Length: 251
Length: 164
Image (cartoon, rainbow over all chains, first blue to last red; front, side, top):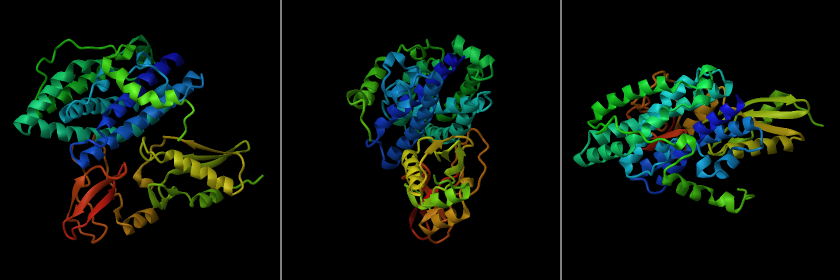
């Protein structure tokens, strides 16, 4: 049971750490100043949520690892995030499409998680749901504006969706350990989340005048099992180099 | 060994200011939640405003310093996320302090809808001229808790402390 919960917390935590770290690459190079500030504000939330989850995971594991050791001293094959969040930022449209996919998922997921029988997960969900709501507001506003904007912005958003769509189904993957936690009322049944997520997507595809060219395409998965695209390793190398070179480094 | 009650601890910790908004103490902000003893250890409980608030470590250190200065020896600061912080915990004094320094204080509002694509606090009262003829420039500002606005009456840009 505690091993299952540890793994569950890692999956949730890794999604957020990778999401935050990846999006933070926009820091200083955002298309406009306000957007630079907005994206890094959101990164901060994701990193903060990740810190909370990985900290709890370390506590449950009981081997003396904390959020920092879990973030900085695991290799890519030990990371359990979905492939979607590690994909490169691409252009602004791709960053927005990813954020839109993820934050829509997050609202539905966290709303379900508030009913968890695990006291910590409930507290985490209530806190993070407040943040997910404005992550969604920001990304959906841009999603509408880019899709229903100029020919150029529409084309870019359309390409972004086609680049990312094949990674989305992994968000709803559950293994046996997850299902045990679902049966105990601790984890979220992702089938419920998927149905609502697809409904929301279709609503916005209509409004935004974009949609996946091939919605039933083959879905690529592997991140939850530690099998990642080449992009994660490179990102982690940059993220981890300082604490690995100087393990005792302090601010 | 010095031992103090909760009330005294809170009055001592009034000295700890939010590093990002130094005119407000952590009590005005509702960041300091509790103070108690566990055996002989003094425990101060703080809560983050936003999950990624970068000031938490600093606040935790400052709380510890302040209590040690007051003569306490065995001190621990713990951070908890439940109940989740809300702008409703901000004191009235804090809100008027904010306004006096040019930051529009959070207005009360309910955010019950899950999917809301509209920023609800569009017409924020300008902290300088009290006009409601203002517009939002950006939902994100210098810190996670503030958004940027512009007053059409007095042509002043200003920060608004967002409601969460």
